[in-house]
Length: 340
Image (cartoon, rainbow, N blue to C red; front, top):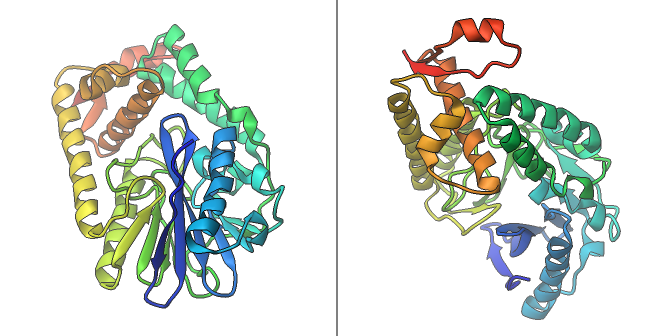
């Protein structure tokens, strides 16, 4: 269990945003947000649904009562917002449903992840397996990685969604939503007066993970960089955005500066891949050259990250497939990429 200290932020319009951390997965802490606008409470994300995550969620409400004297619980939640379709943010919905029937909202591109979850796992697993084959990952390593990918996937079951989060339809008619695909197809940011909830689109320390669009539509580095520019423009046009709160890690007081740092990381990775690919390289080889020796689930994350950057360069004609004869003849070819 993690220490469940609750932080409170007040917007320029007097709304309160409460936040506390939960242990979503071993080694991964996520931030839960509760928006209190004076007329109702909105829960923003709900953890992974694993036992520890659920316990931390309940403990956060207990700490909210003891720390701020605000006697609320899950049964008092009037609206639930899921910022994007990753398990550490929506997996707790079946647990939360035991306490409240509050309507759930998510962006349409992530709706099926929540409502047709079992189908989504099967389809996404097949697409990931295809990616690993093309990347040059050995059969045994593929088996290991697929096992890790599917771990805990059976803890969630399809849950109905009552409304859609649309960019042109502000939440409660006054909180703008920004659709920012890339890290996840249906990722949204919420602008609550002068505080921007960035979910996993912008984080204070980590460069948000990227996976190729060949695995899931509306992901990929191209979409992400475009979305990053969109939020950079929001921060520039709305000079009153004084604070950004992410789905993980710490608050950000300089959002434009953090965006520049993230963009620079991707520029450096792209340049390094171009250097690596002076000789033909598979994505598996590129991943090892980029990230060195990694273990466990980080192997899969590194492969996807490398794949997203390779895909970006390939789409722009800066990389080409160097083994066309093999690709044409083999049933499951490993693609070797060469700098053009």
